[in-house]
Length: 220
Length: 413
Ligand SMILES: [Zn+2]
Ligand SMILES: [Zn+2]
Ligand SMILES: [Zn+2]
Image 1 (cartoon, helix red, strand yellow):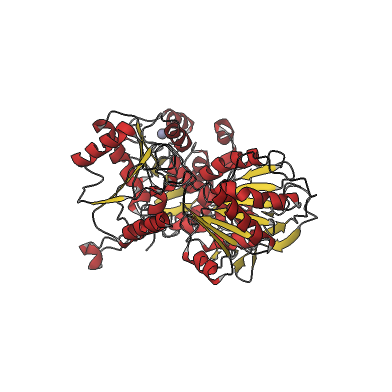
Image 2 (tube, protein in one colour; image 1 turned 90 degrees about the vertical axis):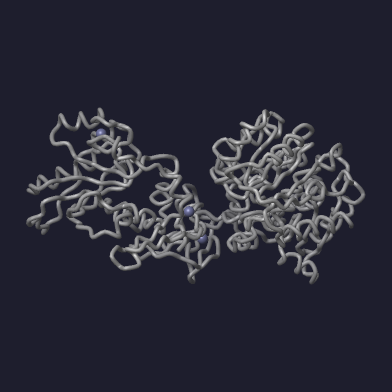
């Protein structure tokens, strides 16, 4: 097994439960040296709302969201440091699909529920040839309940105010049946202002979903 | 046209491309830019080339525009360099021109510090005078940055462009292009003379795409410059399919410093032994020192310990270091006395009175070529041709002995 970032050989640790087949082996896709360059968010000191690092009490952004309605409980694995920016640039920017497995050993939602990815808009899929979020979470069983219509400017090219003013572009696909689903976990690559995830949650509510909605992302 | 001889992606071309030849980015299972065949399939069903993706992705939907590079008007002898070549340098320079005129490749096997750049001038001038286009490629940006101003001074009236990743596009027609080896992938049939400097350097030796790039970018003879040529070139030279010149002496005429090996069980990088610290202190009394380490993870712990143990300006630097240029410049100016570094900085650094210490010299990451190159950073100036060079290793390795044998052979010539 070679590290998907630096192509060095990766050591696999065979623990007893794995050998006995009691636990599934999660093959690490990144070598220890590459993994060290990313900055994991410590849950104990993260914002109870959006999960950003070093904010033990509800952060200012989340206070604003809370005033506008229900607060989304979000968890993220890593902060957006230089190494993570470089990763996103290679994966989403250059379009290096090989990297989509990089974090599959880490990307496991903290709670159980129906996992609903925030898919990219059709124009972006055509340009990239893949959906970056579906790629990152491809090792999980996903429910494609949401669809996104094409918008004019990509989120990445907007400033904060511009992002927050983005209109709703998510809707629930026709034919989706929520059934007795108690909890939905929205998954995305990056939580920046939260606008996209709050829109996605609103789309589910609009379509009549009454259960719990939480969210999970690689980066905050 | 500034894009003469270039091959650009449709996403890079936002101007009239009607003169260009349009080819599909991928054809017959090969990337048409880098020649590699290990393509990756996307969920959409298309393929892309992962090998050269850092220059912008080539997919099955990509069109590659190849711009012709027409002959330029001939000019008067363009060399404005006023220096003098030694008798030995003159003989080699003449051999290069002879190979050039015979239309064959040439290998210049020269020790570091032999004045290789000046030897190239007559050959480059010959091609430029006839209206040809010349490319000078070096593996790394810092070497390109060192080379470019010297070439511009030597060919003061020649339009020159510098190409590296992230460089602004040139805005005019140029006859001389100085570029990183990777950027050769953006050229097609562009150069009537292509000089490949220090071609054994990482990452060239092990990258088939760069060999492909060299042959695709040139349409005339290639001049390979190296202190430690790869077997493939040496064999071609021995078979006579390529010209060969060997320059074993530095321009100051002194032999290369022969490295001394010290076999010692060192617990690096966690703990630096006191005797190593004493040795470094002694070196630093008279010299600056380059301390090479095999692993980027060694940099921080070693630099920290040295900064506590030795009272002088010390820094650690690696290839991706954001302050790399500043640190190297500070070392060149003597503001830093000890630079802890990975192999990435080994070439293109010329400092008078500079000792070299290689830690972990038995590491698999250091082959004989890398060891010779690191040792070659020492003894480059005429007033200190015998700067000390130490290889610290836990075990003897074949590479260590190959390196020392090669240096002795070159010195004996
Ligand atoms: Zn790695
Ligand atoms: Zn928050
Ligand atoms: Zn390619």
